[in-house]
Image (tube, rainbow, N blue to C red; front, side, top):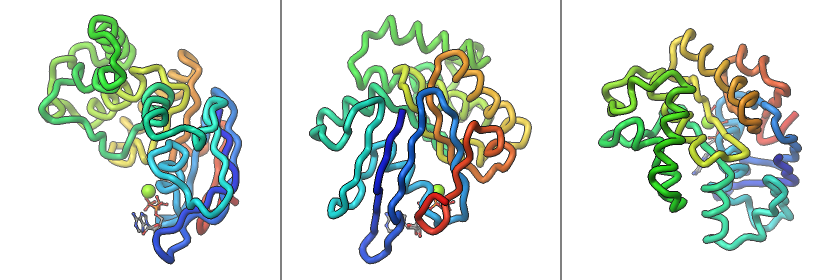
Length: 219
Ligand SMILES: Nc1ncnc2c1ncn2[C@@H]1O[C@H](COP(=O)(O)OP(=O)(O)OP(=O)(O)O)[C@@H](O)[C@H]1O
Ligand SMILES: [Mg+2]
């Protein structure tokens, strides 16, 4: 569940977000579309608590019933690790680690025990059709496989909310289609909320709700 009100963001004198309000119920898949520079990535980073909105405005952000701006920075880091998953356009896997190790990293950051984490990571690899790639490093996998590893990594801590920024922007249309179908399968299986920024009209239209950003606002 995400509740955001009056989100403004400026970079110096560039007013990027001009008062965004949104409400996304648990288990919903929402897409965000809009022209380059409209503020989509900026909004996703604020909703994902990686960035803060301008302080001079009264912004509200509740994620899974928690008022995130009431948390101190240590509490916020823990909240983010436990509740929020990210998938980026470029998977951002660590090149020197295997698929299995990459998937486990957010759990180790959260001090979760190794045996239980690896068991869960292997289940996710199986669910994503990647069991045979567990010990491959990113350079030894295809783009679609790397992106599925990044999806597994975003899921390892069972976050309630997943943010994806152009997750299929780098994939051929078949891999993109498979990835998109996967988001719906995951929602069925684990009940997560997904917020997906995309230029892919087909994916955008598959979502339960499609939001369009124009010039720093949702229209
Ligand atoms: N750290 C920053 N410092 C200054 N300006 C920034 C910064 N990050 C983003 N911007 C500016 O804010 C505006 C919105 O950027 P943002 O990345 O949110 O757009 P976007 O909608 O995700 O675009 P795209 O579809 O190209 O990814 C752009 O004009 C961009 O140049
Ligand atoms: Mg962007």
